Image (cartoon, rainbow, N blue to C red; front, side, top):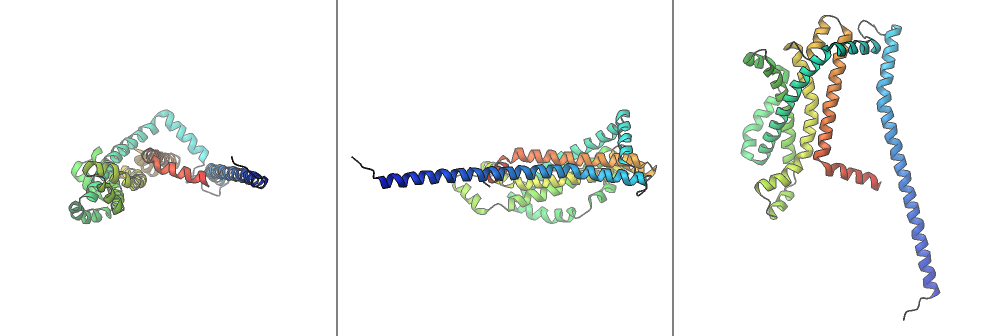
Length: 298
């Protein structure tokens, strides 16, 4: 039969009370930190929305008051009206769909080819040794400079425009994929082989997941580059597309139409990048779950 002295009971009560106070203080600190993070997110969102609005208002006022030449810098309100007219007439849709079609086809083909070649070069050293010097030299070549050669071979068809996007995307994705494979810690592959992970299993469960962050970075960078390249190609080698719309508007001195094309290109670039980010979240759930846990611990 055990006996508990009054001193022991008092100490236990004090310990319990002290633990409860610490728990309450910790919960209060967590709530304060969560409120602070929520406030920061709201502030960031407000700044992200307010900044372009303020810039557009400043542009409108400057163009209306004569601080900017309204013939060159069309007020945003007139650009909006012109854009609406082009949407209603269908003109903007024709050029937008032409650009998006070339962009999507070229981006998909270039991405798949870049990932496959980068993985092969990372896994098989002889292939890397054979192709890396050539790819390094070709990557330094301005992609738009290849267009005359493509036009000479394929003529004024859709093929040169799509291939220009394919080439620009391919090298960025290939380089990032190869870098992702080469950065894998050798101890990880050794541990995988020790657990009988070889061949396809090693590639599927070790090499590919480890290289995915670099691959997704390559896709994000190449998405913006693809938009730039297809717009530049349409300047000189197309009679449809947003690049053609911008260039033709400049030649005819129609700045409002030109600004509509520029804004549409910017929106397409933002949309493509956003889709790649969504894909990254789907492909790398562990990366964002770990980020969320770290924020929660703070």
